[in-house]
Length: 76
Image (cartoon, rainbow, N blue to C red):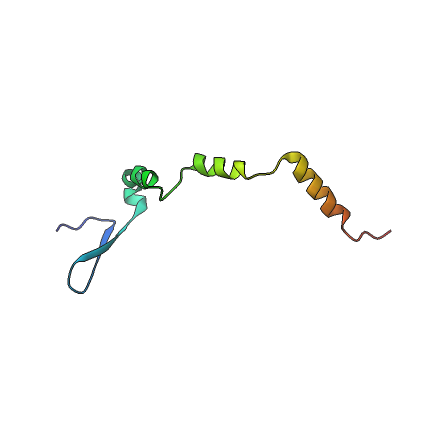
């Protein structure tokens, strides 16, 4: 089997291939669509939408901040 730069095969003691390590800097462009389709990685847009959906509205964030600041032990 020819050696390919950026791919390392891990074998068992009997010589069977058990796993492979692939350098994503060298081969990531080819593998990324497959990994995305399998659900191994998420695109930036998917990650953004997921975080956006779990965010809080600006009014609620402002209220939380004001309540937190009001709880400080200010000296009079």
